Length: 291
Image (tube, rainbow, N blue to C red):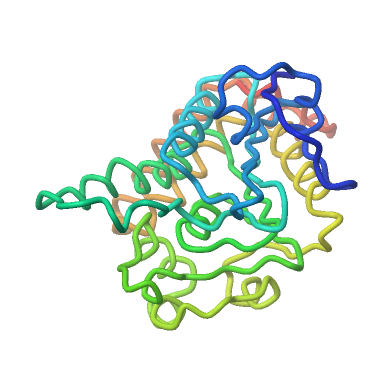
């Protein structure tokens, strides 16, 4: 298990990131704000700024991107969980100081979004391991998009999702106008974005934003169960399936079918594919090894 430092967590809700790092010595200040631990093949990334509802600074954003890239490259990591400490999952980007940023050159804002929020969301979508969001509280703005970019979304009963951009006089960024219509259709997406009303967890599940809502005290347990189930699965097949599904909404049938056939051709060369077929023939449980 690898870890970075963390203060004590709420009783009964400690993630592996929190549990593993309590005794660690401080290294990088960002490591105390973006906690990390790898346990049973699962990389746990935990946002840890509860005093500001886990609003993300540029340094924190870069660390999350690094952790996701590390997960893709590490054969010992076979699933990822993104969660947070405290009452909020993520209040979005930390905007303090941005209003007094002074004169801007044309294109500065676009470059900032492309290099910042969009890179973060892209890192989740492109991660080569399945990513679960365990949403423990309010997910607003970029924080909502961070959760919705994940492959599976678990939400505590107290969680809420809020599209705050238009309420602040802003256009949705961080992939919001890309993600939401694909999840719930354009009409519902525009309703959420235009009005910016808080969507409770149960309603988010009904709309299709969330896979499952669980009691607050069971969120970490359920996330662990789901992640460890993925971590014992055929990793390469999961990766290729993720890529096929994510690409399917941006392509036509012919291209999607061609990609599917190519993915199966690649996957059939893996040891896990051979094990899956052999276990079926031999009528036993498969023992996947992630390769």
